[in-house]
Length: 423
Image 1 (cartoon, rainbow, N blue to C red):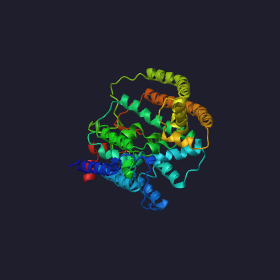
Image 2: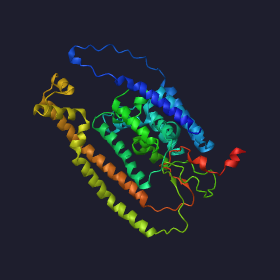
Image 3: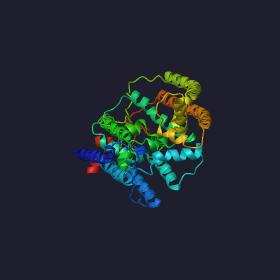
Image 4: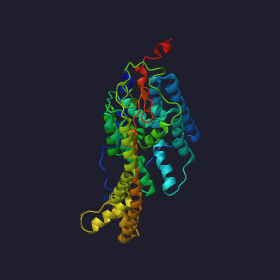
């Protein structure tokens, strides 16, 4: 019975996906055969004042923080996530989203300098502000991307901690890649490849539905794979949550070492106590830390050089570079048929030489951006290794503030304080 809400929610998602994917049952028409596209009739947009969305965001963040820190209720936090999924996901179609707002902020800082709309700025900074005070409560009960995965996490298992750390680097790569795309004018890749927006908007490409479906299927056993291993905004929330003033704790009072919570967290966010008789060689730890600090500049430089060396390959994310390569290949006879993009280009006023020159200028721009991307990944790797090199002793079960999503799963396993709460 405890899993009945999860099962019903998953059946609802499957029904939504089936309705949305019905648009792909028919082949794409041949427009060169005289076919006339019918007039598209779209429903009027929902004219919701920005103040309503801002109030909903602030209200749900505040309520989730109260449910996590005061109520300590897993059920209520899960209900809060479902409500946020319905409003921010299906009703507001996944937009505005703090995850996608990363691109708007990056575009202002390193892109073309376009200003960030006020509501986008609020959606970007407010969850980070709450993370500085209360931890990742946005992930717990407000983010629709996290909520849809939390509902599907029926049989979550724990990954090994080394594997967790390795896979976690992909989120840093996605963040750096998104910033690189904005710096080079390559587009909003986070929004373009959002795996769940197709479900929210009841429409999208077949590939994106497959990607979202695969992630949700994986998420049945590996809880929240997108949040943990891909979400670029999750990286920023992790950094802010590490310094949070108040944060969810495994136990509301003194830990009695019952070990009931040890395997309750599928996110590896519970740090187990250090055995009293475990040897602690602080000199060895200091040596490892010193070596990592000395190696960090070399690793960052090497990673930056690797990124710069791969700039021509990375530059293919830009449509102009891809078009130039396609036109050049067609000119060399490597393709027997022209693509739609190359036909559109040849119908314009530019010559292939102009296109090649524009693509070459973009590649030079990618050379610098790719070097910065590589250096960022090198720094992220070193930062994670430095953190693992620091030896810490813990006497109780505590939450890893960076990794903890404040999902309240561990609360149900802790017997401390339950008698008082029941009274």
